[in-house]
Image (tube, rainbow over all chains, first blue to last red; front, side):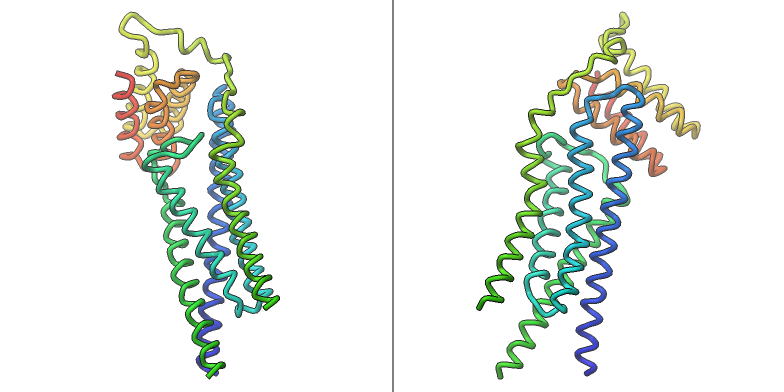
Amino acid sequence: MIKMNKNLTIVYILCGILAVTGIVYFLVAYGEYEDWVELLSFGIQDETTEKQVEISLFIISGLIYFGIVIWLVKTRFIKKSPYIASILVSVALILTYIASRTVGVPIVGVEYYVGKLDMISKILQVVVIALSVVGLYKIHKSLHTLQA
Amino acid sequence: MINKLQNYRKVVLLSIVAIVPLLLISNSVTSHGQTNNMTNATNQTSASANGPNSEIVKLIDSGISMINSGDNNGAKKSLLQAESGLEDKPDLSGAEKHIEASLKALKENDKNGALMHAEEAKKGLA
């Protein structure tokens, strides 16, 4: 019973962090929107496509994180797939971020500044990956126990 | 077995949803990236006798002194004007990116970051 509660605590924490990561992405998207409006007010149109792509990417990322939370709850935390999805999404976004700060990504190019929200989201994503791996391990372990 | 198959389908679906934005970045939107607007061409052509980008360098310098004096709003305006002067100059995109970084640093009240990137932008225009 205590073990069950501990397992549930882990997935609840995972859901909370997934939701917070989603919110952070929405905040980043809003920040980019503000920057875009500011650029337009100075007649700078060059950045329009870049900003649109960034805003879309951040909103979609936020929505995906909330989608994974719903998926986890709907599958009652016992299916492996949402955990795998959260690992894949987080790894993909971390890699995209690293690429954007080093070699550059198409349209956006290389970004030089690492902001506070960027750091927060990357830390949260690493925690998401770690907790999802723990969740997968727990499911794997309990399946083995049931089979035995 | 059916459940397992459905789970894999879900994983594949979600992975596709994660990859779509990346594909968007790499391919489909490139055609829209050619939006060229000439409304700010005045700034670009206003080069003085000291060099083709001296007006922009002056704006960045003014931004730097405003950052040092704590006038973040004034600095933001100067840097945005400098950035507007760099429109349609793809060969100076490095300097433009540093101005953007400086603006982002200003937004986060990171004075050192803002100054460092403004200086880097100037180097890119030299």
